[in-house]
Image 1 (cartoon, each protein chain N blue to C red):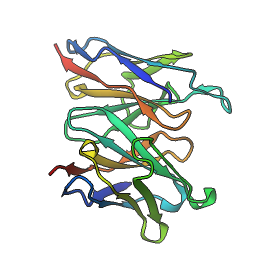
Image 2 (cartoon, rainbow over the protein chains, first blue to last red):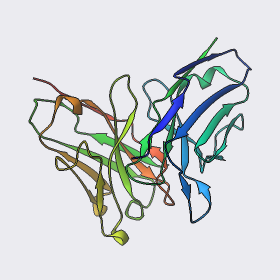
Image 3 (tube, helix red, strand yellow):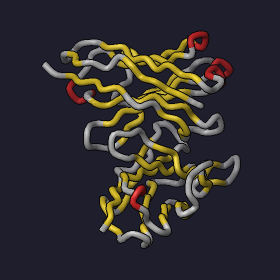
Image 4 (cartoon, one colour):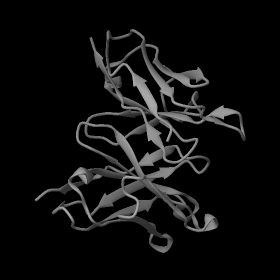
Length: 113
Length: 121
């Protein structure tokens, strides 16, 4: 199984400031057919299901604000919120979809400082 | 608008059985792979299993933690997905979500609101 390790567990950022979440996979998640990394990011607010933000490590889902961006390569990936807004308070998860079983990081809780 | 609505969650004793349903609308159900996930209160997300579409033989895959106890099925005529859970354990207590994959690869652009399964004596 591919393990996904997220850091930090929690993050407090001032409004308008940058938040960066890290995700590391235990092995390569490069999809050979398109040479892209099989990594998705989700946002989960309290009492709600996860919401897809990013896929292929850096492609923003339709309707997701452009302050959210994904990056990284190899086995190290990041989700960046360029200017934190009140509505961004949530837990964020990375997920690899290169192979079964699908696996998630442990989550990063983002709060307002 | 895509909608996924889970039902069937309940309180059940250890060793018991439960069947969850997921009613779908707003997309071509038969085209998609469908997955079940679960989330323990206050904890992270866990993939439970998936069922592929007719073109891929309705084949299934499961997490090791549920393999042999849980069975995923679908009824394309009813736009419905099912999760049959047998030999339930206390550690199966969780909110269960159904989700629709992107149609390209298994990342998930639509999720249900979840249904709570509590396994307790």
